[in-house]
Amino acid sequence: MSAPAFEVADVHLSSPATNPFSLVSGGILRGGRYDLRKATMVDLIRLAWGLDADKIVGGPNWLELNRFDVSGKAPPDTTQDTINRMLQVLLADRFKLSVHRDTTPLPAFVLSAGKGQPKMKAAEVTNEQSGCKSPADSGAGTYSRISCRNVTMATFATALRRYAGDYLPLVVVDSTKLEAAWDFDLEWNSRSRILQAGSERTTIFDAVEKQLGLKLELRNVPTPVLVVDHANPVPTPNPPHTADLLPPRALQFEVATVKPGAPDEKVNYKLLPSGRLELRAFLMRDLIAEAWDIDWNHMDERIAGAPKWIDSRRFEIVAKTAGATEPPRGTGFMDDDIRLMLRALLIERFRMTTHYEERPVSSWTLTAAKPKLRKADPANRANCRQGGLLADDPRDRNTALSRLIQCQNVTMAQFASQLQSLDPGQFATNGVVDETGLKGNWDLTLSYSPKAMLQGSGVPAEGAASEPNGAVSFLDALRQQLGLKLEMRKRPMPVLVIDQLSEQPSEN
Image (cartoon, rainbow, N blue to C red; front, side, top):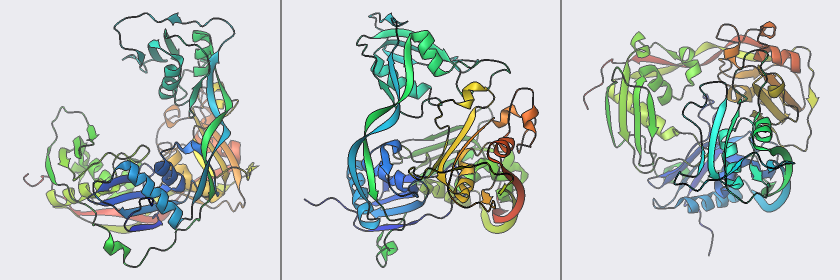
């Protein structure tokens, strides 16, 4: 029996993304049409094989950087498992992707027994539900806390990564050999928590050792992986008239109500698997940003001509889409089709007209000051990540340096292109342009402080390193640690211009 395949499929490179928060959109079959957009090859492989990205190894350098759009035709009742197998066939056909399964040592956090007896109580048999929970007041003060009752060490290892993810970006493996169930409490300072100057951070590693009598260490562990042997960077051309053979995209809600938001209602945002979308107490400016896929950090620059009331008037929208809306794990919460449905609704109900204009917009330019860069290890696949892994992590030595960026085997142009999505809240950019003139590939590590720790607000001015709390701005860290510099300049970018917008929606 042959493997299932899409009846027809369109595959092409994605257009440049303007919103770093909305990458990897879709992965949903609606009305016989499957769409997945802005997905890297690693995204495509992990969805097709149902794997975590860190279990995909090998392959060419572009695997985590180039992005693609995939549209396919399939029977409307096709299961997700069958869709995944269709993706596998598509990748082999259009990208000549070849993979094989293997086992290889990969970094993981290993939970093991300490030298003495565990500092935990044997579980009491009660009617209380087993598991680990975070108390209601956890996070309100200095410490993060969990309370675990009647849990095995295997269960605890899984919970650890969920509750202490800023320390544990990789899987936690239980090797304690403790078979019983246990009761205990645990508290620590998260890496993202701002502590008072001079305070000592209690890391999750310290907490596990001192409070539980266990050890949590980073080791290489034999891990089942999927090895990428080959993949072409450009898909084979689409067959003629492919777009005409695909089912049309569903770009309107089946039904929708729009009304003014209640004065005392809190902002609430739900997208349910049934296809129901709920947006409550949303400012009109935020609805526009969602519908036109504009990063909220850049609304003032990327939206023009809007009446002043969009910053004060709130609305409630409840709408229903055709078919399922629950995207696969690791894709965006609101997919591109629903954004276009929301856009169509705003245009219709608020009698809205718009157009785009190229206007000068503030953006950063990356330049070289006195570069102090490390040549890349060519064995590593190119990637940039927020919150990587370091043996002697600066975030634990200096509590003000709670942010960390790590890049492997990247060009300066690739590093610049990744900065906005790595930490879009740190500085309000509209993309970063590389003008360093530096050739080659590099390994980069950058540790710095969140904007909240710096004096004032807005863009991170240089000189923040002298602040009494020990904070180091992004710009200072870039200059001091890498010998690079960011300069704010104007460059033309498309701006959404609102020509007409009614303050009152039309009747439901």
